[in-house]
Image (cartoon, rainbow, N blue to C red; front, side):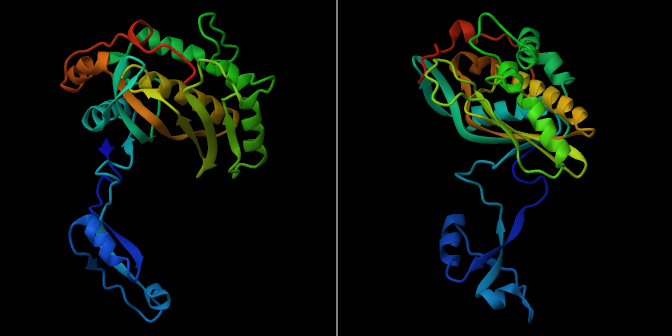
Length: 285
């Protein structure tokens, strides 16, 4: 379980155009060390550039990605990241900690996960898996992900992805959208985009969340996506690969922060979802 761009690399070789060294050096707070990669055919000779060894550069000292083997590990790392680096914000009158732009990557995603079994809310997990199912309909919700994936204005987007992947396994175009353009509904999907690619004999699923409740819902969202990925891979006669994605607003609500810290401290916490009781009301803004 590694938080950052690489679990082993402490430096990387970059190619800089001549004249860029002072600016990069100022950003790093130290001189650059020339990598001394010179030869007659060296790119630097032909382009007027120089190679330098620099440390991994983080944006505003934040890791570029959370990489984990399992969903549970990713969830714990994400909670830690938001608690450590989140900025105070609010949604209506409800306070929260927020990180803008969180990338996650899970190499072996599975619905069966000991951390989810030990600490997740089983009702939330079961309900989220049901929300993603074909023909899913919940009277208390304006829509389900199952409806947007399997019956988006009469189009079965899941079958559409399967057809594209089967016809051209190397395709870059098996991508679907879960938003209705121009909708003025108060409640919009938090998950807005899904993309599948078959690479090296495995099906990778990628996603975009406009917003994600990291403590209360992320684990369930990822489990449902892992199930969808497995179903898609099976229909395409392949196996699941990596699950990765981007969360535009990764947040933990103020009413969950104490429990989140207890979980990170190793307490035997079994979380109980309180979003519908204490969370913000949907306003369409």
